[in-house]
Length: 310
Image (cartoon, rainbow, N blue to C red; front, side, top):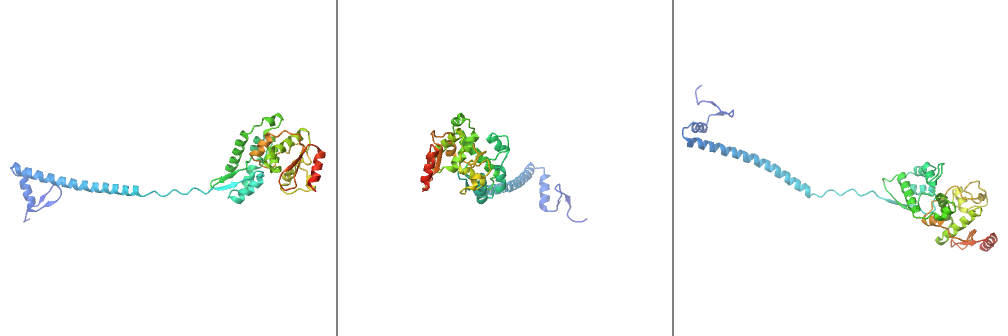
């Protein structure tokens, strides 16, 4: 075919230009200087291509660094706020049923589940030192507890028992043991003191009266035990005194079968360490002070009671 010759290039292209012919001529030249020029030209082109590739990589790396720096300088989002805690206060002298009412009113915890956990169980029997299932009455320490969204009824009950155990560990039970009273007996006595006494200084005195009456095999005649049997802290009536319940210390002698509330530390301390005296009776004063008169004999008690009602 007429025209310029067509040559198959090593790179797969077809070269027709004069530049190509000159390059081939220089390559085939016998002059070493021509061949050296060609080699230098190829080397420069390869270097240029390398710099171009390196520049692209550098830009990519530099872009990545810039992006990383930008990300590092952006402050992380603030952590989510902690769940709100609700303070729940159980006053000294509350029954566990009242505590269940409180958590139902103040929190989203289940009242029924709390009642189930606080009711008769093997755990209560262990704490009381008894074989039959026993409620946790007396062991649910009254205090303020923080209840969060993750708090369960079981966790709350556990914390109350832990608080009770810590408190009891700080109380000396030697005086009670000398009178053949168990730790559970002390808790029962403390629960009665908690409901009967409003003036702190009278707690160990009332504890002494209880000890004296137990020693003399007298009925305790404590109205708060009747109220517990009724399930209501209301004023009792004459008919209530005949209630056929082992908690009715107006009818049955000895300690009631269990605590009538959950006492605080002061009442537990008084129950374990009563004040020694000859008092066998006490009667609430009618002046609204919350204090009591104390008597050593039945005659003295009757006289005080007559004067107190005038």
